[in-house]
Length: 162
Length: 388
Ligand SMILES: Cc1ncc(COP(=O)(O)O)c(C=O)c1O
Image: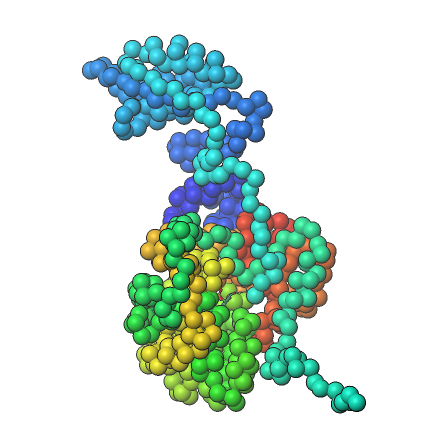
């Protein structure tokens, strides 16, 4: 693995590794690590850093919905144009173009069911190219970004073994 | 009138068993058991669980009712895959006749001693090394000849150390690289030198290669792939380390047909067959868990770099261990037992003194990096505070 890929791998595993520890793990100098991260940030490879939080433990617990959107394109409008328009709303937590029965998979987050519904009916559905939306309220979350939600598992190995 | 003469206890341990001492880590184990918040670098097994697919395959086999014995030598589907797998080390074994699947490499090691050692035979044991070899030789009524490797050789076995110990008069040599407890590996030239010694003096070789997949610089070199060595070598390997399957108890031996036959003579009466559920897990592991092994290896390598850097920054001397998941630094102050005990008492960090692994380990500590980076960081912070 080259240095860039190695650093990305480590930061995707844990964005809180210190520069010093990253340097120790990769055998690079701290300065090299800092510069590489700065490049990854400025060229947009790293868009941000975030904790993976179990939504059930947030207070108040937000309401989230997975919204499927179908669109019909015309000559002037592309997927990117529609995505651009939708992604600007702060309620849209994630937005992806997918293959299959619908086009956009959108995750919407707000403080109440009413807010989510209003957002979909007032901001998403009226977009002229969007022909249909299906809203699925999220009922429980088990895993996100590779992390399982729950109590975590204790290390039950013997303290000494040969 | 009752008989006065006292009969000796009929259930007293045999002399053979009584002559084998308790493991050197027992004392530490008892100390640590009374403490909270111990961060352990004393663990000789992976911190990962077995690959998920392997676990699923085990469950699936149970649900399908695959709970009988298998063939003594192990399921043929498994032996075929093992034969295929070890070709990466230039090893070529016939799955029908030259592979024995066992309950951990531990059972294979024991079966080999019992199958090959006659009373009074001398078995040279390269040390420091895994703790089972000496007891295994003694249980087979053999004589142990310790061959200490040296810190200045970075714990690699050399012709010189073999000669210094008088190993030419031994019948068998047991050795293990990548090594537990030192983390040392041997390159092709070094292995060739040991192979030449064994050919020159007509020694059989028992090569414990259980950590072969955890080699971080260069490729693992098997002594059995050296010219003229296949016929005089037994290779041990298994699923405990590379696949993080310690609790499933599955290993294997690779050896010439006549040796597998005599080992199987022991195995068929003492074990009958290796755990069936584990054999199903192992088939899945060999078929589909290569990326899990690669990922674990990557993690170990990063932790290895981390621990070596921290030790170096603290001024603790440590050679660059390139295999398994151990580093073997010098104990600050020189007395490894005192250091390990004081460190445990003062900072609740568990490390193992090197002499628990036999000759040549004095003055060193085995630290395992099979722990999360968070735990390793905590342990290193505490060690740093302790030596300050
Ligand atoms: C060098 C070495 N050989 C063999 C074993 C035993 O392995 P298994 O779990 O396959 O019996 C171990 C376990 O710690 C080991 O370190």
